[in-house]
Image (cartoon, rainbow over all chains, first blue to last red; front, side, top):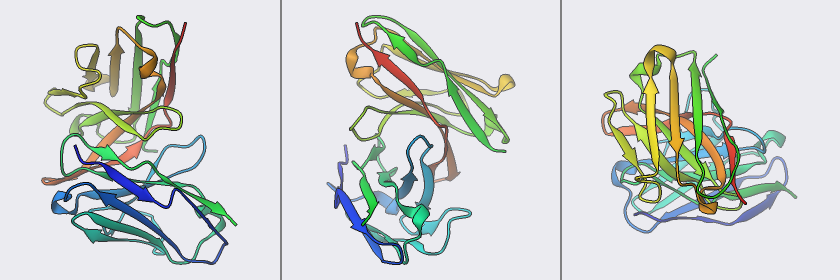
Length: 108
Length: 120
């Protein structure tokens, strides 16, 4: 199965700053079949990005995804207070679908 | 409102059984494959099981033979029958909708989850 490794584990930034989150796969993710989710405590994960770079409905344009093959990035251009949460990547190109371990984005 | 709401979680002894349910609303349930995904405390999310629109079922190796997924489209509901539970099954269980197009199917809607604790 494909193992996804996210880095960093924790990212401490201030509102207004730019956040760059990484997701690296142990083997190539077919057809850029990678998504990013945001999760806040006690809430369901929320889909942000699918197909590595397409924003889901209703997601602000400060969120962007890029990458292909084994290296993927989620960028938040200017952090808003509501963006501080845990972010997960997940691949759906191969079975079983697998997830990264998450990056916690915290307020500095 | 488009929603998935899980229920049925709780505390169960090792070797016991539990049945989880997921109620869907706000969309045409029968047109979507539905999955269960779980997350143990401090661990990454783990895909558990899926049922497609034709009723085909799929399981992770760790639960195959112990868990049974089923759906009742007329009631917009999904179930997960969990037998022979072990402490390793302790997690929050999420009901998840699959969405997309051929060759590009992904999880677009998650419930809030229901916690399952297996402990003596």
